Image 1 (cartoon, one colour):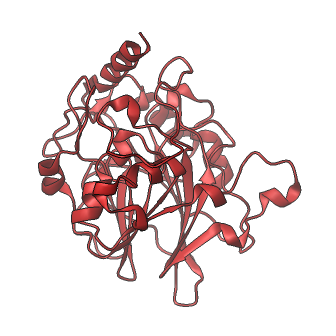
Image 2 (spheres, rainbow, N blue to C red; image 1 turned 60 degrees about the horizontal axis):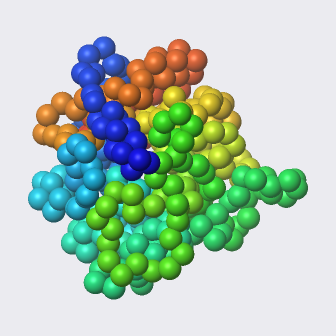
Length: 336
């Protein structure tokens, strides 16, 4: 019965509507300067000093109902951008719409990337036939934990950062929004390596959901851009980063539009805490059987339109951008 409920809810999420009147949306390409590309769902790609950072992409977009899922290699080939210079791939959680395509992309497109994520994602990527276990780092064990009672907890610990070239990042304890009526129907974790990739949707367990704070550094290791990324809506204070003593503000906040009605004060509380200069909205489009060659449609069940209108009215000084999949967004001009 539980499985039936899950499938019904997933199908409801697949019901979509036009984006008519849904602004702002952008569809820009071939931008110069610092930029980020939206790949659809929770996937984003940026380059900094010639080094790429990839936020777990998802292209396979299974049809309704998604009972059994496999990576669609042709769809990946059709839409995955050049990624040979990607050195870092960040994975927020291990649901199929975030991890399903990652093994194939690491093997054939981002062959120089190391993936960083939670323990469960590591156990999935450890499937022997993938030969990816040595290219995964579990950052759950050193994540910043929001549930802490001492004043020291609110300060960043230098050991929580991972530095790769001109980038560094920190995992933050976050939370996956419920799917329906306060229930997360695809929760769970793995505690040992898998023998083969899951095929049944329910076996793509989420593990501990992570948010990330990402710094793009200059040659002196000073942050030029600070980016906050979440691939699932959450209740506060989950996903909230610690205080960073350098005084650098968050330039870009990347949020997840899906399931915002299932949590409270999202993204409002996080926006008030971070006060970013730019808000990028992802995971807003229908991804069941979606055709990225056509204008995407908005998820009907999530009522993102109400959230977007509310956020737009409440946080007018912040530049809000909801890009179309495979389009680019210019990062704001660096602050002095």
